[in-house]
Image (cartoon, rainbow, N blue to C red; front, side):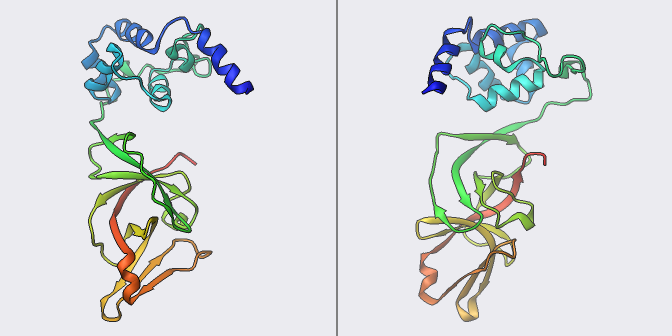
Length: 233
């Protein structure tokens, strides 16, 4: 309850909106919205939508923009706080003044929920969410890793795993596998001569999953894991 009251009070303390503050920043930079988007590595459609109010960015997007601009996240949200990022104002760098910082071409990848790195979990989908990343990753969707069974492949709990849709993978490749209504992330080994499928974890604490004969009817490979995004550790 106290958190809810605090959030309501913060909303009442707003003196302007993200839309208005973003417009201020763009005007201060002396740029068009397209130039601004290119420098940030965002699509011009996204920035235009934020400016005209047809789309409201989620909190992670606002945080990312504030960090790129070295400005206070709360100020960008519209609160009556100092504009400068207090933590970095003494050594901040304006990315718009660095000629060797190039814009990144981006794409939106559908975010479909969580994938188990451990025991399989129910496959939940949230098709309204997207993850923005570089166009060099040829992925069709992404999932958030849950658990520690793939830490040997440097995939940790909370990491984003980007997946290319395909129904088959080579032995030893990491894939997102549907087991009935559950989904898991494992290395796949298939032995057609014995009609056996093994899903191998990258953590010795976990035994492999084995499926033989008619048990294979409940197995479906959704795609090959081709990249992952991890926080700095």
